[in-house]
Image (cartoon, rainbow, N blue to C red; front, side, top):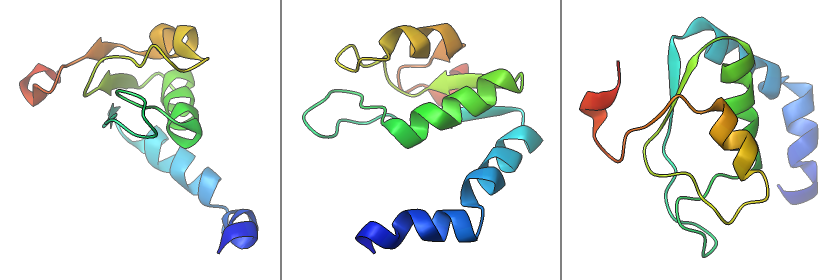
Length: 92
């Protein structure tokens, strides 16, 4: 898929579709696991989803602590309502 991946996203309007799904819910749960040698990684797509949720007044829950190694850590902190540390019972 490689270089054609963005064309498929554009053709089928996947980013808007995902935005609309987030708008229709009450909250998002970010399952931020270790990836690319970064503990509790949050990548570009997930960062965008957090932004969608935040600007639409939806709660943002992180399963694991905020990754300190990413350059957009301050923005994640500003948009996150709760870090649940793996305890799904903390989602309210």
